[in-house]
Length: 301
Image 1 (spheres, rainbow, N blue to C red):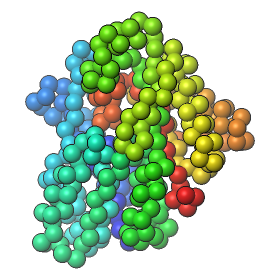
Image 2: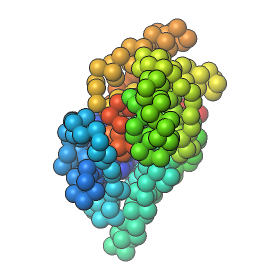
Image 3: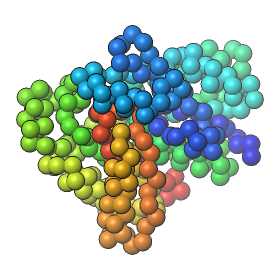
């Protein structure tokens, strides 16, 4: 198969390497650092298991990520430009990172040597699991024979339909990042309060609070059910992914809880795919982030 255009995404999409290769997605990885000086590219120079191990062993050290450089994107673009193929590059929201700017600079760097190659850089207005679903839906369009222009036309409705629905293990990372105050963080941890959080249109919104991990997981399942009902969708109308942080058993637990709840509302369901959440969100929300990412299918918008 020789698709009409190729798809490149920055590493915020959290698509596992094997799945990326299967769908012919090139990934431009984010560097991550624990000291603010030495950076390693997630998935290339530091594996997720090592990232989470360090986060758990050093809870008072808060890692950070840096956007991929223009040179990182240039190398990825040139690999495909040499094949004479147009490129659709999907990046994390500009409200969260400067990745889009790096990709745009890289596009300009290649313009003179590859004038016949079209490079479209898209701000996904999302990250992590929603970006995964967004990219995989664009792959579905590409593989169905849709043109680059048709894919670009679908970008805006896909962005509008997308959501990230998640919760966290504790409030330390949100407090460190300035999302909540220190007093609120201490009190919340003492009371075992878990925020329910929605990301929509690139903005983070509070969607409630639950006490205890199990109730917070049930809470985000209800957010998912509410989204489907409010938009008149069934699960089959959407690409829905589950993401977990450090502990894969929690991903399985949420998968089982979600399947049961969706079957109550919509009838028999296949288990939802489960991915591990990567560094770009883990460094802001902590090692026990968990939740859903979703977009409407392009043929059911």
